[in-house]
Amino acid sequence: MLTRRRFLECNALSATAGLLAANLGACRRWSPVQTPPLAFLTPAELLIVSAACECILPRDDDPGAIDLGVPLYIDRTLAGEDHHRQRDRFRAGLHALDIEALERARKPYVEIERAHQDNIIDDWQVGTGEQAEFVRLLVRLTLEGAFGDPSYGGNRNGQGWRLIGFEPCEPHRHQQG
Image (cartoon, rainbow, N blue to C red):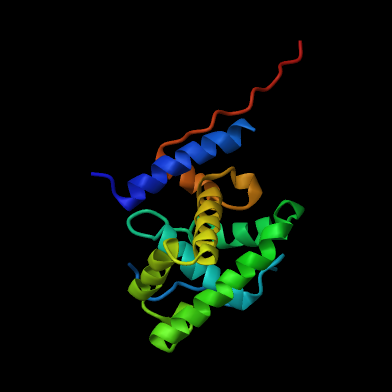
């Protein structure tokens, strides 16, 4: 049976190979003391990203998106010049998540129950073009952050690789003779 986690693992392995070749209830949050300096997102946006990423790759017996450093990876990635066209749309998507949560549950996205957070993400996959585009970008960045090379700021301590059974080989060291 193909579960959501297995589907994500398979897709992440494919995405990682490509990159290498070229319910706990409420949202887990960082305290202000734990949050490192942000490159693009505001602290409030980081909380929304954290909650949304955890819907995509939730913690169970294995680490989830937050454990893998995905929200900070997304912050760093969006700050880079390669993603300047996506910044405004991503930021608008985060704010729209909050508005949607307020309309549905009268609370901000990070304060609603996890099931309601999941429902919004699920509904947006087949929602308006902007909603579906936001979810696709969120999923892509979540998978990159969870399973990409740790040198880019996600996949904390290579935990994502261990989840999918990937063991990178050590770089070859040249022997001087």
